[in-house]
Image (cartoon, rainbow, N blue to C red; front, top):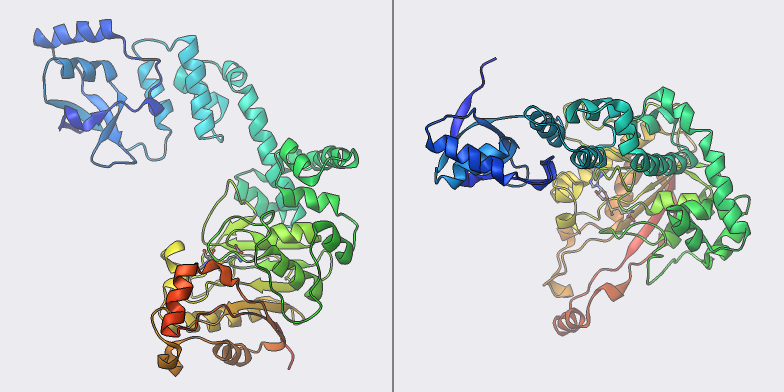
Length: 474
Ligand SMILES: C[S@@+](CC[C@H](N)C(=O)[O-])C[C@H]1O[C@@H](n2cnc3c(N)ncnc32)[C@H](O)[C@@H]1O
């Protein structure tokens, strides 16, 4: 097969240690090559690929010694094949090339195998072995400890997703597992639970057990509180119950959910769960963000399917990747084909363009006011088509007014999106509210300087936020 070669500046090529399989350059070899070049010998072209981080540069795949030799003779351009590896592992490709002229040393082979596996744990020992010139069994030994840690991390993910009631086919797909290998992981789940339960019964705290086992706190809470009723769960978690329809907290409970733009307090989710769902109910969070809902569901003994456009398979495998896209050819689609339908939906969309800079470009926070409201309407219709008649909706939203530099007296009627705008759409789409609960955001997020500037101009900021509880019967 003929290969396209190009002349490229030597200065645009780098040796990227991350994909270099040898311990270092053999300077004696470079010296010999340099002499050969001066004597007029022409070497085969080197191989490079574009650097993923800086497309103006190329990184070496094959020919580090030839490249060094050309450089040392003062040549400015070098003949190279620019490869497109099409998703193949560059380190293993470079290793395969390197062992052509000389086998990797034991250290180099082991190190390359470990680095390749760390970068991509779905690589098989046989594939790694082929690239580095070692048997599958040898590679198994090289990476045994890494594989064990990886298996444990995988089991923990499966445990969490399984406990949240995500069906096996979706867990397998999300974690890149063959359906058959799932059967191998499932029997390990009770063992994982027993070991954490054992530590809890010996008096270790939830945080200590979580740290020891590499679990998240909410996973341990889900075991520690198993069998308790909601009232006792609240007590153990240190949450008071707000009896009235005003729920207010200054802080998010840091044990639940990630630091996320627009994060809501776990206490707020827990109140929704306690008042409007039962243990083991299936909860749906279509825009789950930092994962407060699934975390709180674990602590409150509810199952939860969560989705978000921001995909974090490593840290948040339970939040399945899904973009609700009204502009797609097929319109808004439902992400799952499961027979089971949620009993409660907790919908906490971006509050119009608030935090738009922090979310993905395709977030609905980037839409115009009109398009945003159209999305909300289409989404509420889609929900109705895909849930049970008895399913309730907890719609969380805040008043949006463009108050930034505008004294209250100058704000215009149609400038904002207020609770009545949402209530109109909700009614129009067949969602009828039973409760409007005030759940204001903390005013502490405004710093003192901003507050005093607002006071000078009579600006009225927004901290109003509502949890609107709805059903489908009027
Ligand atoms: C207000 S945040 C949710 C915060 C979450 N309740 C928490 O406490 O962490 C809104 C979320 O909606 C997601 N989002 C916005 N537009 C979306 C879309 N079209 N499809 C899926 N997710 C979207 C954003 O990525 C963001 O995480």
